Image (tube, rainbow, N blue to C red; front, side):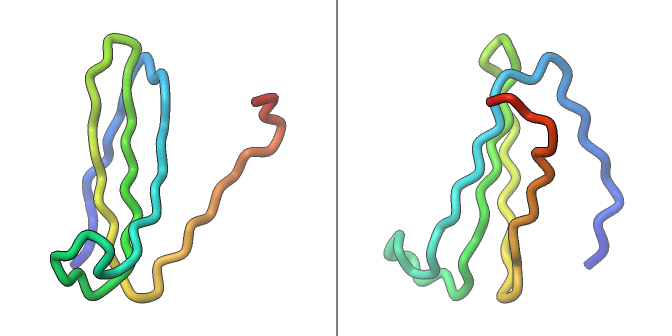
Length: 66
């Protein structure tokens, strides 16, 4: 599968990234996943669920104060 969609969140307030281990929710998920939740200043949110056996998290936080 290729991904060809761009997502723009205006007035972003928070970005949460959570790693979920395979099978920890009791459903039998076969791979670890990354759940990404982006909330705007009004509390609206978008969720992205990323699956894959070789998925690695890369973060660029250069020059960030918090």
